[in-house]
Image 1 (cartoon, helix red, strand yellow):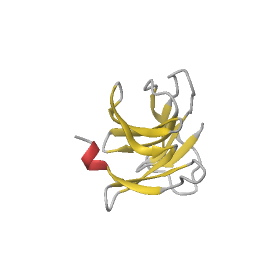
Image 2 (cartoon, helix red, strand yellow):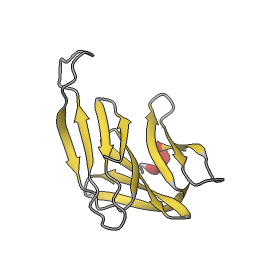
Image 3 (cartoon, helix red, strand yellow):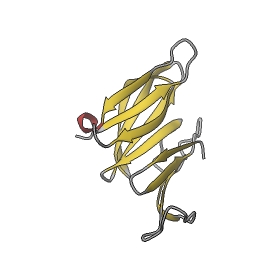
Length: 130
């Protein structure tokens, strides 16, 4: 995997693929009834969304949010259900990385990776989920 994020019921992992839009997103859920000491996880969902240069993902209320880099240009935010993600081009800073969802504020947090242009920012998940 290229990135990893905590989800409500487990982990989200994904692949960065530069030119071929074949990176995968995988949701790993803790088996029901498992305690904190349990290390086994089950594959709950695997998606190949066809998004090149995925850098981060979050799963919020059944909807995927995916950050994707576009080189030195502003990054993209993809939002939707598997097979129906919508591209919001250039709404993130250049080089967006991982995504993390903060349930209390319903914000998605991300950061950017380019030298001398590194930001940490929050994005309103509900504003983009429409």
